[in-house]
Length: 144
Image (cartoon, rainbow, N blue to C red; front, side, top):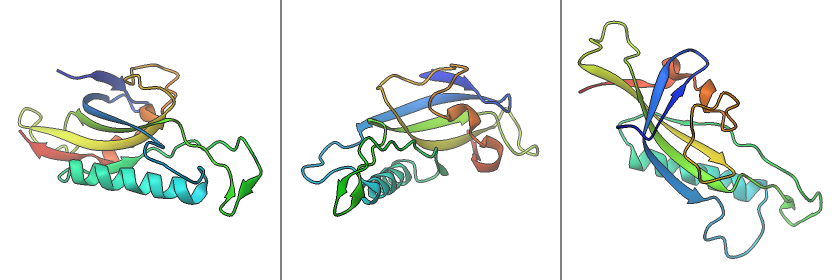
């Protein structure tokens, strides 16, 4: 049973089978969010996804970055990512036409950031950018 189903803009339906949520800035004891820190955070979440799902390709939905304060410290202006980092395992029908659709499925691990801890849904406004996943180019088929 899936946590959520999303219809991509391509028309493909994908199912969210596992979701890991983390505070984007959890554990940050000093400093401030800036480009250098955010780039390290994004890279860290990508590495976490690759370790958690080693047999599945990983894709990053580029996060929005806000600049609430143009002044900053030694590392430049304040730059803020959305509050919740998400790692999701998605499944769908096969990608390769030569694979038997009864014996195979396709999979893709996605990293994205969102402002709330809600499970993404099939919202046509899609504030997370998930509906635009380039599934056929990125997902990998696997045998059941």
